Image 1: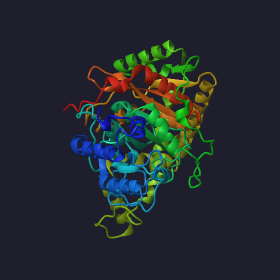
Image 2: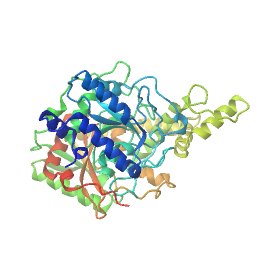
Image 3: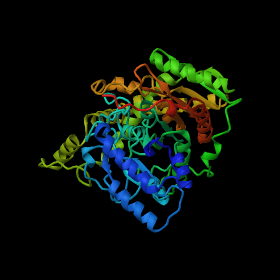
Image 4: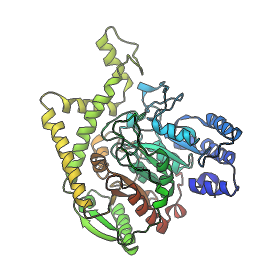
Length: 485
């Protein structure tokens, strides 16, 4: 097995045994980027030379922190000091952040080295990574398919072996859905467990930084690094520190798993449903107690999400006005034209669509009918989950109703694209943790993922349950991206 194919914990084991060096690890990923990036198009900015310099400094100073010198990829809406943070938008095409996001400070404290900033849907708005100003990322399993979104660059980079792991962000499924499409593990933590300081906001009450990794143990290792309270983020929770790698081998015997019937309706692809049913059978064979349950408000979650998300996007993106920073039009004769032309030229079609929708639902005469009502339904969604978690330890569902679809097949049908989020958005509405784990492939050889949802701050539970399945089915050992053209 090539170095770039190894998980981070496998790399650490080989380093401990002195079978490989950190320089060999970095070189392996650099060579893989040179070989495959032209096909996958996962990066907006590559910083491999900077990574080389960082590694030289680490070795010169004999820094021995466990993760020192290991490469990582960063989604391009996470601020990185001295490196472009574009959010895949013309609006921030040349913006270089003057500070690091809190998660980057934690990554830097561990002396990890960034290989670059990864492609995404513009301002994290989209489900296919086709809404980037710079390029369209391809799925490594089939280069004619989308990688999912908005963290498609992060998921594709991990799947293709361009980076051993990556950070993404999840507003309504933007870590989990691309993880499912690309056959990797995507963890969306509880809202507040990881600081959002330095994450460029899409929808502030929904956004959460997450991880994309090759397996569950790597997700636990990376979560250990980035979790924790941050005084710079008022929504950051104060929690006792947990070592998530210590909770992975507890098994699932006697564990109660709820299967929401609403997630297995007519809209779910037949092969996806069959794969999830095999997962359910596997958990039963392992001793878990599996029962059908109901999330009565699931039918309203999608509409609720898009009202809240668009409203917050409209507010958050108001700062990009052509004056303070970001893109500024050259064609204007007064202040109104400066605003209008800068925003019209700087934002892409999907971002403008959501700004317009958000401004509408917040406007006088419509606020009570839409935004206020959506917030009331949000409370119902939270209550529905709370009711189920009194009975079940985790809830299991498909991550997405389908597998990765063809490039350009849904780009002109935003409603169809939005419907693909039906399984993931309730988690963000309720602020819960969830993880997507690959469980097989369909008849075309495209990955299928399933989702485990936990109660607030129960990352330890969902990681353990996910790890138990992973050890039985061994997806990585049986399937690999084929880069079909």
